[in-house]
Image 1 (cartoon, rainbow, N blue to C red):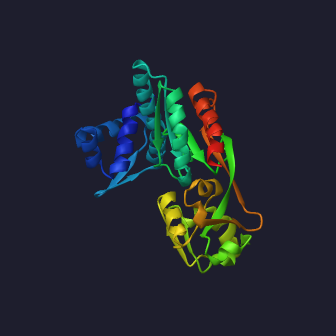
Image 2: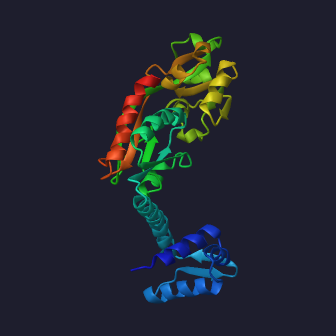
Image 3: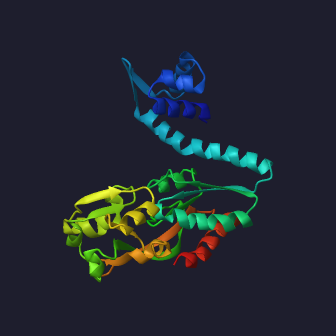
Length: 298
C-alpha cells in the first residue's frame, strides 16, 4: 500500500512548483524528499517526475498520484478533525458551501434555528467554492452544497428546496419597467449588473442573450446583492436576481421585476449531499429547516 507521505510530497511539489519549496513547506531536507520519491520509483519501477535543468515535469504516473492525493488527503484531514471533535463530545461537523451568491441571506436565516437545535454539531459556511462546489462536495471539502444547478452524479444526491424565478430588476422610472416581459434586444443598450460570475455561467447569458446573439452594453459584476439592489434603486443599471430576494428588500418600492422572456427563467434551489449521508440526522435536519425557512422570504 502506498504510504500517505508520498501523496503529501507530490501534492506539495505540484503546489509549490519545486522540490526545494516543497521540502521547506514539509520541514524536510531536499535530499530526503528526493530520496523518498526515488524509493517509490524503484518500488514500482516507474518514473514519477523528470527533471530537465531547473524544470520538473510529472510523468503520467506522477499526475495520476497527484489526482489521488487531491482526492484522498482532504478526506483524511477531515477524518482527523472529526475524530478530535467526537473525542471532545461533538456529534459531527457540517460545512456548507454555496454556488448561489444571492442565497447568503437565506442561509443566514437557516443558521440561527439550526444552531439552536443542533448544539453539539459544528457548523461552518464556506463561500470559497463558488461554481466548483460539486468537486468540493465530492472530495469531502464541504458536507452540504447549496446550488441552483444540480447535476446527475453517481456519488451525490440533490434535494429540491424551493422554486423561484430569475427576473430583471429595474427602477420604476426605467423605460423597461412598463413591459410585461423583456426580449434579448431590450438589453443591448443597458448596463447589466450581475453577481461576480463569468457570462458563460450566468443563465441570463446562456439561456437568453447568447442564443439570440445579443450582449448588453456593459456587464458589471458586483459582489453583494445589497449593493446590486442599491445601484438599481438609484437607476444606475438593471440587474438579474431571484424574485424572492427582490421582494425581501426594503428598497422594493423603488423597483420593478420583469419576466425574462415570455416564459421566464425558472430555477430551483437544491441542497446537495454525498449519497449515503442524506439520512444522517443533523444533515437531514438542515434540509428540513431549509424547507421551513422558505415562506419567510417569499
